[in-house]
Image (cartoon, rainbow, N blue to C red; front, side, top):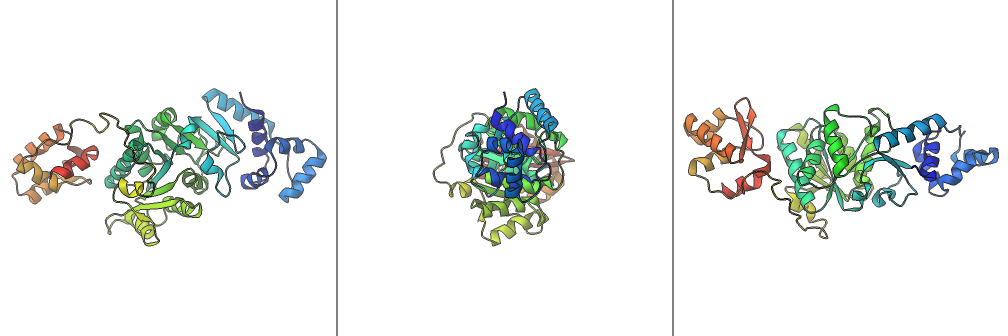
Length: 375
């Protein structure tokens, strides 16, 4: 059942010509139910037009009923700014959305949360880094916030889910719209382990101008924002700017100087963002939360403490997060190609390295720490 308050907010949202921001500012002082009643009388409408500085049209009843039907059909719900369930941190930002469309468990937003964002065209190194940071944050009982985009966002959500932890995806479209299409199954998994939310009504397409607006919610729901790989024109930098304006912490992961995706994080670091080399750099800003919540088996097979032979150590020292061709490994290690192949096969069986296609190999993303510690 939809509450009377939520219906009032839907009616308000359906009126053309008045932006959600103007409604949100007005609704800080006048309850949504009262506004809805004012819309029903000439005198009340005149007062609203005076307060809003412009003409106020009629609510679109058809829109309202369609939104309610979509919510009921999909098992979703609405949460208004006046609802006690509305996220506390989000309520604090300058212009909180008057209405949130929710699928999943919104109560996870009551837990400490960190946002991880970055490039859609991320390198393997960037994806592995985002996955690892999200996994480690989840183990410390943080909720991971991101935007369900390709690249870094996807890796962050998957990292949190790998620990069976909570994660929240904030969309720049309706929560019933699969975008990007290949993340439809991931969105379903997130809604079961956490929640998906949007300020945009059901059926809203992923238009370009929606995403800068969405980014203020990513930072608004979080204690801090971590940027992993971003060009100078990336939306991730916009999220970092929102974070600074909202008095949230800003973190950035440095990268190779020749890589275009490093320019955004490097600029943020020059501007005062916290440099992140590992999860401890993030946790240092939030000393109230450091307990590791174990999730047995989440990192895959093996313990990571198995002894390595001399040849195995040489091969591991030659490999990185980014894939290397076997010929390059042979040149670095000065070991016969047949021996390198044998070593790689053994390490792959033990889960320490992984084959990346085309004769390339890389350190397994789930075993970075273990491999580093033994070489």
